[in-house]
Image 1 (tube, rainbow, N blue to C red):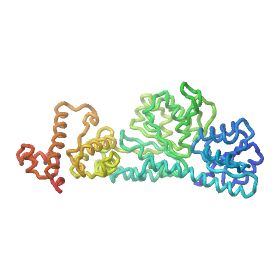
Image 2: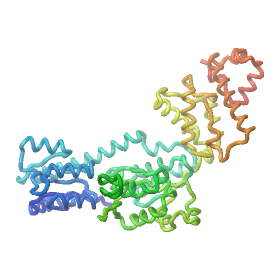
Image 3: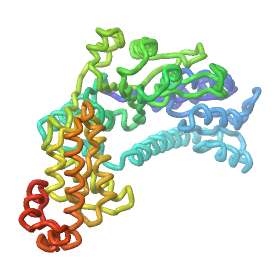
Image 4: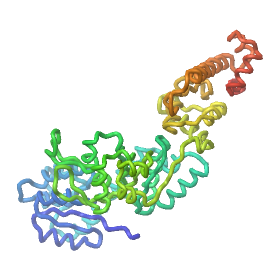
Length: 460
């Protein structure tokens, strides 16, 4: 697939001059020419551009410097190159302070080659800034962030490599906390779009119903109470890149109809507006709901369902891929230890075995992460031990456990923490630890065996 040439907007009231420029740079850029500020703002609101060339000396209601400010309010990431007949320092300083990438002096033939060179630099600079934002948002390679060596994870990575570079829409399914957003990020990273657009996510379940459309499509000034200026929605913010509609099964039915129309027509209107805006975002959807059942219940549009699931990637829960839990836990302990200020920590085999034996019925990796953060806070040594781990039984169970089961679990957690603490104090000396506990050594050993605690892990 050949890449399209970048799109440029040229704003100059000397329209013949601007059209000549557009013709001379046509081999490098697809250009649209407008002659006044209002037309420029209307065009930027209608279509995504990669760069704008702006005449400083516009003979209009506002000059080029004032228009530059409005453009930057509309799209802070759009690189703007100023065209000027003046080389006076105040003009140049005002341009750069206003957010212009550079300026080019009009009127000489060599300025055309200079214009092309500056345009290439500006577009590349904008691309690199987006790449830095992505790196800062996720320091690790997105594919490497999908931890595990199970057959299920291998298939997911294979699917990402297969469909990531394509333009098809993907539906990611799986329980809450399984890592669906990580898969979406990896799909974006594997696509051509990662070089020219950003990854944008919207959690449809986290928004009040009345705000969903504004978040998706943006709104015009005065569209509703409190709308004191135009706001860009997620579809615009993700132009050229990827938009994840997370928990799409929770989207209100009215908004579903509008999303379907955007996917089919590739354009939309902001809330409170009547101007058509082009959409150039690849849409990936994710859900923890059974959408077929939601269709039958009348909560989800069947036509939207068949539009978004051109390819399906399913992320299974941790209990169906227990062999991945140890890999995930080791990484989380390392990363979270540094993040919460405890430094890099290790994790014992006993703790890994304990974590791998759990079902993680709700929230999956998210619950595992929270469990490990708590364990790291309790951990006094360099290596996290079984006794540092305390499970939130009520959050993980499908229903609250019976009293006897809850009591047994609570006692077991206390024993883990208590015996682990004694072994740390005695550097793994079982006899000394048993004496401190006032328990016979043989009974102490039985407790350790039942709890899966290895005293050797505490011996220096």
